[in-house]
Amino acid sequence: MKILILSTAGISSRFNTSLKSKKPVLKSIFYKNTPKHSLLGRFLEFHKYFDKIIIVGGFLFNELEATLKYFNTNNIDLIYNDKYNSLGSGYSLYLGLKKTLEYNFSEIIFSEGDLFVDKDNFLKIIKSPKDTISINNHDIYANKSVSLYINTKNHIKYIYDKSHNSLEILEPFTAIFNSAQIWKFSNTKKIRNIINKCQESIFKDTNLEFIQKYFSDVDINNCAIIKFKKWINCNTIDDFEKINFRG
Image 1 (cartoon, rainbow, N blue to C red):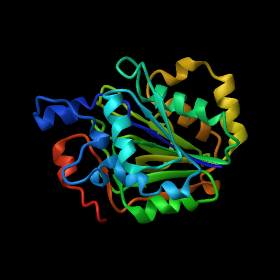
Image 2: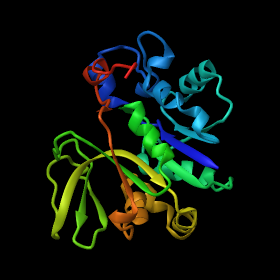
Image 3: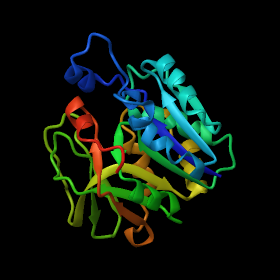
Image 4: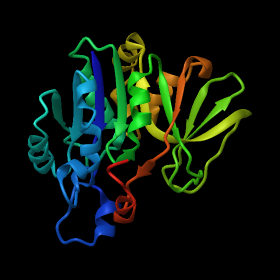
């Protein structure tokens, strides 16, 4: 059973500030022409490749629920994150993962819901038979990047500064990349063990704590790396204006 988890619970503060609208919007469902031309609409183009799509919402949840009716997709589980205004994106991932435990899943893809990615490389992640990390070709800046590096033991390490000031690596490394923030987890036993053994507290901040636990002992040679040709982290309306939904 193939499952996609999308996190769309956040309050979209930077997006709404840039939009300068009196009425707040949820950026994952924001569109100008048709709901298909939204960030969520791009991900739902791939619904046929998944047995289940678990969408975790919170902010403007009723509008998200109403928008999903437009797509008429019958394999979606919509989950409400009642702590969307107080906890980080890790808690949305936690709720999505807890839902997957109800199913006999074989693999999970997790993505932040505020991304726009090219179709070809997202399909490569879907079709990858093993653990997969994604990268993009953007420059790495501490004020906006989620970065990863490969240490001399060939292990994957993620670095991110919540205060957006600086990044620090305290060990030798062989490569560094800008993360595209989409992951495939193919080891179902490991997923269940992490969820069952770890305290819920590791999910109260960013989603990287779970992701790092999963990938900490994964040899990069046993993992696929997919590089997106088109990748936009849609933080502002200017970011949204750069999107070509046909690409």
